[in-house]
Image (cartoon, rainbow, N blue to C red):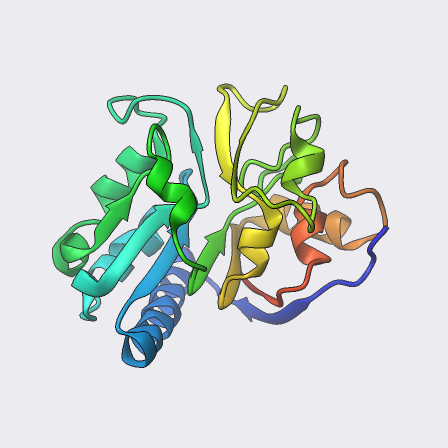
Length: 223
């Protein structure tokens, strides 16, 4: 069992507004550096309610968005017409304003998603059950999804805690990101993170696979 944890830095904020603005600025700066170095950049984001304000702040920052590919860390296997679609969420809150020029790469029914290059930035969330991406406790393919040696980049997973079958990028893909951020909010999530940083099986709280992995993680948190 891996026990090393790599919270590289903790960015603590008093309110959501300040967190969203700072995370957006940090992500935009990292994307701009990648564009300057290689002429393009790739960003992977998470769904759910937590990142919407961050998305909106990021969409207003002026970088060369036409050179940015945006994708999802994971996705519910539902059509984009569903309110539960992460792709729908990203189109509504991120791919607007200046960021409307970005190229979006959805996961559902899109073989090209698995061919994306390494992410320059990946922003993860975390559930109260200790899942991140779609690494859910009890997932039918969880062992493979969090296997640092798997050759698969994108994998289907179903789990008791997930309402629908999902698609998720695997642990090696997340670990290869240039910058890896964990964005959580609220006292309950902070307590869950404390538990995840303690000893215990990765299968019980799969976010541990990321926290104990090869890539340093920067935490963004507010009450």
